[in-house]
Length: 407
Image (cartoon, rainbow, N blue to C red; front, side, top):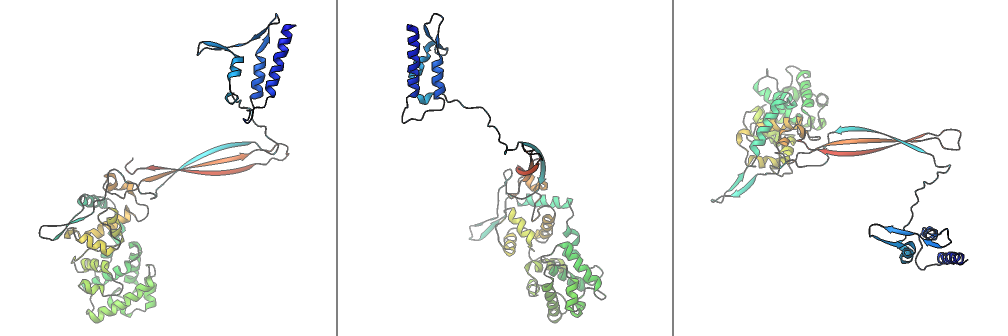
């Protein structure tokens, strides 16, 4: 009887403890299970005496009763049980299965500029000597870069090698007529590819009355007909006016020949400094300056030889230090290089010796794009007799950079 009263008293005490509201703390959801576990630890023995289970803490080497542990344990320290049961799906939630398929696409872009190896800009520098004169010192690695480009140009034939303005004049004509054809080829070449320019020149040479493209035929041809013959080149309407006006100036002021000075050539409508210097070299055989077109201007700035905004600035910067024996060939060299390897869009730095040797500070890295397509299939919905299948596709693009010197 005494043991029974003790057991009933213990149960009542436990029930009162479970009803106590401890404020202002919020009780965890596991508090009830914690109290129930505490009550379950009290087990009656066969002889009716109450025995409290002991908890063996092997780490500390001591044993404490669960009652003492419960009394000393703060309610915030009680372990919170995390339910691992999965939420039951309703009828409106269909089951899904996901299948993936990946594809790798390699692209050549010039997205972000990446410096490779130890390439750095080494521009031309100027200093003042003891006599007070300004001296221009060429870029430190210019000769190595120049020789490397010469070697690369020997391996690949560029459009300028076979269809450049210097090679479009017909060989069987007189020297005067050949000089005139060279001038016309240069006037047509502005904002036009060499291949397109060669087509227009060939039409002028073959479709004008015999002997073809001469000063006299240009003076006599109707402007509309001339415009039709050069229709493929850029700005053909303006070039038709320039060619007709220049022909009159050549007849009236230069005795039917092209000028033999830079000033005379620039005085012709549609002829700028670049054309004048190139024409002097090709037609008269005299190199008085560097013909700087978009390729020469762009590539030399990429190499860090100078920092210029206009082709005329580039010409002055190059003529200040580049050896004179290279003034004529540098245009032909860099135009072909810009047509085959150092393209205006999508430079082929992976094929360039300058990038491999770390000589070009503007070399870019290739980008490898991995496109991953994920297809999501929604299966038949429960509770509906007709299946409803839906396909969704999501594309994930991952870009990985590959340096130009990697094999």
